[in-house]
Length: 385
Image (cartoon, rainbow, N blue to C red; front, side):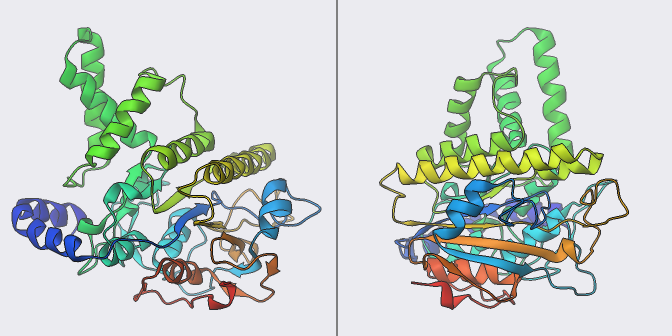
């Protein structure tokens, strides 16, 4: 069964399926554990430009955050048949704690459109505790619409009833154009453009997802639109947009689990090394803003864990003009790292041994008090204070 058929069937049976879900949600315990912010230092980055002290372009990450918790300099993506070192694959490894836990959801040219086939951290959390969907958030980049599929897995027992919600420019545009059409006050040319763009956005994501975004997220977009307007020229772009969405979400939506999917270092595929190094600096600045936002808020201060790790590494190919231009399953593309710090995590420790990427999901689950029972990685129990 494809995802569209799955969702349409669920939508047709919504009145029957929501009743047991609602009763189970009411029976679930309130969540009282730490908040977790999972940061994908994404787009593929090498250790040399991120965690090597002498060559880093991320000084806040390396010189400040790495000393505040557990620094894992030798995390690796397993070299298994079929495992690719790329962005969607690496992100789903982090969310599910398994390799190859995805399937093709209709990939186009140069689009790795995958969907999880195993439960994500968001589903585990929301099944175990009474956490509303707007407090389980994915913050997604504007040039990665294929990652809009990551809000839930097509797995038995879990699925859409326990999904996360997505904040992204794609989702805002869907809201904005729907509002312009519904208001009907714009001139005819603007209305026609809104209809065309809304139809194109819906066609790009034909999953017929039901239910839609929650009232809390809809109100979030209403405030965002009121602040930045409709023209698209005033809101931040690129990874700066993700930081703006994430910090605003912390203040307005109060997420208990949030994943921020930074991505811009991947622009080095075009061959300009400064696209890569500057993007690392932008993410580093975003990390500082996120940490400062948490520390200034009594709801999050002293009760939040940050988990920062790449989706994949990059090549170190001496035969290329830009050695790190791509991430073609080379050894360096399998070499990543992690920094974990916050409530309940040891401070100023280096975990000086190889750690597999699949350990991230079960470790977050253990921190939050649930089990990611389909994950294949090991819990890093030794990092807990």
